[in-house]
Image (cartoon, rainbow, N blue to C red):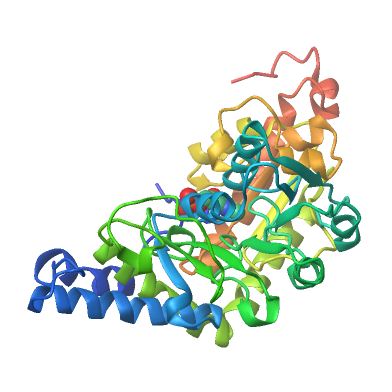
Length: 396
Ligand code: PLP
């Protein structure tokens, strides 16, 4: 059975070049980067090479990069590391749970948090951020690209507002990295989070950019690794993989990769919109990363569609992977003022660097068939009303 994976915002496969780069660091080059002998020196040099590659992807200095275990740790490190009891934080209503729940924990610990709304296209308005600044605002944390809709946020403008108010600015760039160019100098952020497994490096890898001179309280204490900013023996093969993936991402971003990916995404979207009635794009009209589309299909239950598509070999998602199984519809789509029904009827389709034109052909064929079939048996849909009473209608 043919299987096509279009859930790359949940995780991406490790690319063969990344895997090849990592292999020696499990077997021959296995040293501890803190050891002073040959093995340690080889490990140290590989870690520093990877640090330079990650820095180059973000236009940062290598010393400003700290390796982490992924996006969740990076977001926690940024927020817990900058905020003190009694401070005020500004975030948005569409943040990933890694930011959202960290802010909520800080609320329990005596901080105040304002979640600014988004418009119907899923965009944060910088003026809304400015409006809610308080004298004790310490941090603004707004994501660069949303994981469910792919909508890109005006982080440069928000960062400028933060600087003018002398407030720290953190951006969760987990879903932006490797998809659109990121230049930390241009953004002017103090801290920025990326995750390895969204850019074809292994799961459990990541990095934070911490602008030179930013005093951030470490979250993990122990040895003096990562210039005292994150204790613990470095994940050597993982870091090497992240470095290689960052290198490949930079090359891809500098070539035709993004335009080709956007063209594939748009082809898929247009063919769905043409073939299927009563559907639309969440975040339409907003600037989006090239790999993501999020669509609503009236009379369809998103979870049911994901299962039905999976049975046909197509993997997509009905919201953030971390909240799958939860009965609540996506907080991101609700924040965009979709009705509960529309939010529940939505699915996310996200491509990776391994996605081919044939994969998109497959999706364009399977989606209309499956939706047509589900609507036939949906009690809410006119096709099932028209068929009501006919002996041939079967719910299997
Ligand atoms: N932030 C965003 C926007 C994400 O999409 C994710 C993962 O889905 C994370 C943070 C968490 O990253 P990780 O899975 O590496 O912990």
